[in-house]
Length: 346
Ligand SMILES: Cc1cc2nc3c(=O)[nH]c(=O)nc-3n(C[C@H](O)[C@H](O)[C@H](O)COP(=O)(O)O)c2cc1C
Image (tube, rainbow, N blue to C red):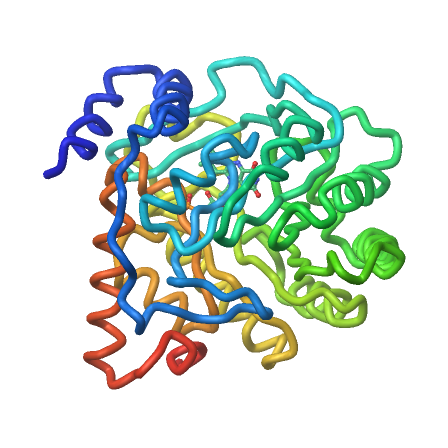
């Protein structure tokens, strides 16, 4: 076990949100781990984005774009920052983040706490090489939520490697209603229009991030709306409001559940999106990835790349290196020469 992994375990004596703040500070000071070069079998392209490896850091970890550089250096193939909203907001009252150690899971009801677009944009403007996405959302009190997404897209145009439209957080009341057909048509229609009006030189992929708690008909409607409006992909999935059997005393906390209990549910949802989209958009898989095998299962179900967050809470910063090593082993064992060759193999 590395010193970094020992430090990550020691964090568990702290309140989870204090531990997270401290981790961000240490990373910003340059005290994070540094990974070596990537196994070439893990390199891939997603909607034109060139990734040195297909394992990304999911949003929520680096909400304010403070540590994307150190997280890329630690071995992630890409980092998604945010969710950022136009104006700074405090989020929900603490406690709002819970470690469910017995379940290898997390429940959060952060509520889009973030510093707003200006500091986020200033930090992205100074970034070096590497793929850094911006996950954009709406302020809780916004009168016109769609306008907030357009504001985020416009302000960060030319700064982010890609955009993710997050309508799947369970912690902003009413936000997930944007996944219903009429609301989604308006949102994606206005975003597509805004994107077409922005300077073509800054054009990058735009993805929609969805919840794992959708009915069959909703999956088809979302895919058709995404395709009709020219978005490049769908990220499946955010946290779940469902509560499978859990052992931890925090199981009854309100919020989104992530980590191990989300693995199967989010992979099933990914398969449903793969079937409905039939190759018309790219898919990125997230939800409960804690091993190379978990990442491989998402790829076989149709994901061109994957993202993780919760497992890092338990596995420490060395986890991404182990996941990449084991994923490369899975690919070679089954005779795939690249990640792309295994996408949707199921
Ligand atoms: C503490 C916490 C905060 C999160 N914040 C965001 C967020 O701001 N925006 C977002 O799109 N997803 C957010 N997520 C969801 C993750 O990006 C991811 O989709 C989800 O947790 C499933 O992946 P995992 O099981 O590997 O964590 C958050 C997750 C956690 C645990």
